[in-house]
Length: 185
Image (cartoon, helix red, strand yellow):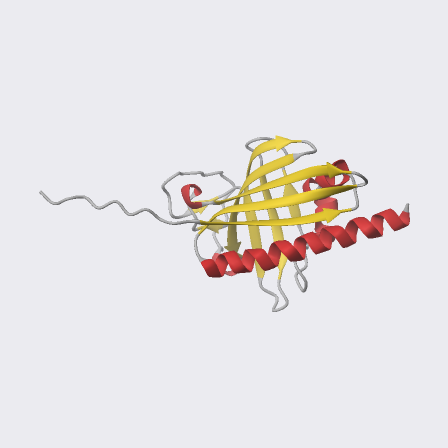
């Protein structure tokens, strides 16, 4: 009888923080309302042409990221915790539209499947068990809010580096968006 080997996959985490001169309520809304999210989401040179948010525990979201080269990436997942206006926890997966050409209106969520067709009509190769997780804290301060993004279960250092750049860019975009909204008021 052969001895079974257990391989433990080391996953990486990152934390990105930013103090933004806006209330936790305003920032929470900007993060969870599609019409606001599309105005600030994405690092430099990335546009957000579409976002869908079903803001409830177990609800799905998906965010389009239009790259400079025209490639469209979808970030998608499911909400696990919603504590308005202080905390969001959700799974995080990425699908490249070019590799997702199967359309299906049924929701599938298999813990072990390597290919899943979600209600968004895109086939995703990530299994739910391997999904990354994002926690966003909105900590009120005097006349501002500290936004803390904790991104967990990242597979490689290269992906962690990419996420770090992406999150810093997103938080820059959120800060600039809130400044522009405050000036208009």
